[in-house]
Length: 166
Image (cartoon, rainbow, N blue to C red; front, side, top):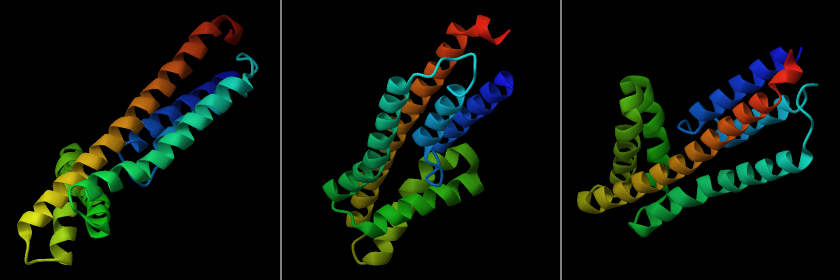
């Protein structure tokens, strides 16, 4: 049973890593669930302080994920249209362009969103799209780093208690 829980927890950590790029999946929180599952095994002792701190980190990153893109968009003169366009552009870009769409999709979506709001000023829409894109990249980078850290912590916990598994 422990091996099954470790595999499921590891899969949650990997899904969280993917979720750090996709706005529909809460990446760090999904990775944290993997850590939680790991601590339900008999081989790994439960450490509620560790789980509490990592949960706190995932909640802070979740909140920052909403604040950072908004700050980037606002800093460059954008509106909610740019932020919504950036998220939709990411999804459309991933579907039609694969991993390359992660870069082009949010930028194009933010530009289109700002252009729809005010089509008379394309330079302002371009500037706002750039700000939204920078904010999106910053938020994604933070989520990705936290998910990598959670994955490393997961692997370290399994490694440290390897002899208890067999």
